Length: 364
Ligand code: PMP
Image (cartoon, rainbow, N blue to C red; front, side, top):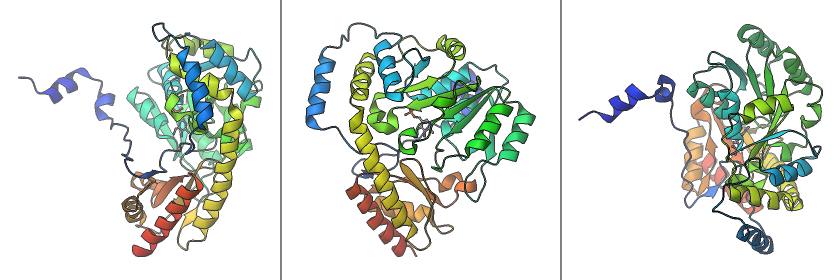
């Protein structure tokens, strides 16, 4: 009988065979502070009204392929014009994939690193030439001369800039971003996944730069389970991408639920304010622990550096005490000795800080 691995090797592209699967840690029984989710659930009365909305959803029919009502709710909530072009995706992950799928096979894709892993992962899986340009070691800012040199050398068709950046949490310098947009021979996607916590955006700049696209998600706002992202930019660019979007990529339940949620956005705004206040408190508490260095964050997480060689044991110590955060240290490079914690509810943050103090002291 044929060996299954040989069969796979003979069938699938080499890029797929070389990939490792995206790993999601098992959070069963743990306080989950690893994935930049909003920790708050909805009040019961809102849940009841949402369920009433779902009752009216016809599951026997395909969804609206253009998700018109949802798109209108997104435009309203983002302060966009009624006719602003939008492309909706099953999470912004799907939009990243769509953008990359539309490029010619030998294209270069460029992004600063450390950055969001999907840019690299999806580029490589599609056989594209991914170029990561290191951020400045001291503050994770953009290394503008290195970025401009890489643009000159590789002529990337696509550049991803996360604003704020994941996993570092900082907002890149706007003058540097604009220099990159002006120099780019192709498209620049500003990934605003963490915009709710940053209060800064490039949506207002779309008219100024034809090669600029702004991508957002509702995941971090508090709707990660729905899987919905969107891309704003010129009708011409989005029209091309729309041709390769699967016709019913936003399902009926997501369309109805996200529209409902965005029409109750004041709830998320309140939750965002709580998260930002907690971010300041957790940052100060981390900075007060000798040997731990947190990096300033405009997102709903904080990256912090542990003393050399200690990240793994601190991460494991936290897990043993019931707290799951993200260990970035195995990625090495600028992330060696780094851990990332998502901001949770005040009692979860307190439990994290308490456990961190304990794991840190016990592993000294
Ligand atoms: N962009 C960035 C910078 C992210 O950190 C993430 C999620 N971690 C995404 C995009 C993907 O978000 P979504 O849930 O919309 O697929």
